[in-house]
Length: 371
Ligand code: SF4
Image 1: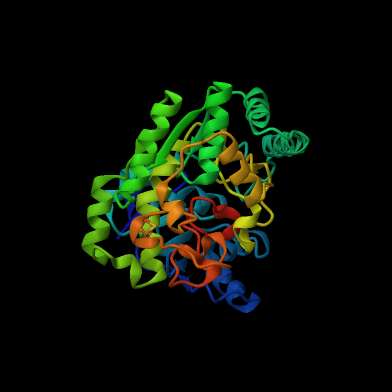
Image 2: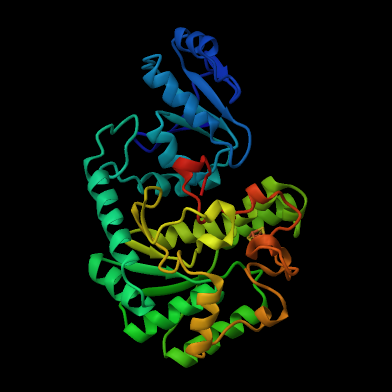
């Protein structure tokens, strides 16, 4: 098995078995002290996608037990984890698929030490400044009523590239309208997962014609999709949450991360009403995972406000909404909702509510996810 040195980005052969192997459940002082006393290397296992407990173990080994030796990540690892492994004190990662090595290295170069606190950069001075900048913008946006004025304010406030990820849903169509009204210099794209409803693509064209702009379609890596389908099957995401998260990871999260690379602002259409998990969403917040300001310019809107805005401006909408679809994602994973159900009830309806995110709006550091 090959090891990627996360600090230098170089590959080397594993020099034998680790001195200690910690499962994510070994989160107790006795186990950690014993592992630390072994002198290392200490391997920490990641059993599944989305299980971030290994990061906590590594941080505790470093901070509480003063462990200075090698900490190695093993198990279910994906390239997007690389910067987070490094930040939580890992030195090496065991690479199962050497075909992914370039993706791993590319993920490592996404690290912005100055923004992010962690074991190797404990004084995140610029992160403090960025967090403050985002909080100030959040307050300013909250004092502005009109959506186009919010768009103008966020464009004025953020230097550099701002990008807008649209799913062509009602929220995103309202934001698109406001961006077009302002003529704001903001990139617009949608994630073309390969599983979209035809109506979504029709809405892309309708919007382009109405506003005279282009909505870029961003596709996943073909090789990654092929490998995923070969492993899990064409509808593998129906059979296990891990499979579903892996599908969203390949078709959404990784393409999104590539698009966000180098951006200073990211606009999305999240609203607090969508679900309990989104009830605390801000108009602007520092997104540490992507090192940019995440913007949800209609986070505080009610559904009534949204539908009134759409009607007032005769904004083109996805025809599926008229058939009971509210939050629209990929065709096999979206259904119409029943009266009284919340907007997210039609997404991955076979799963528990608390797991129903695709990963693109989760902060991996905070949530322990690999998004
Ligand atoms: S929503 Fe469904 S089809 Fe689309 S990426 Fe996620 S699991 Fe795959």
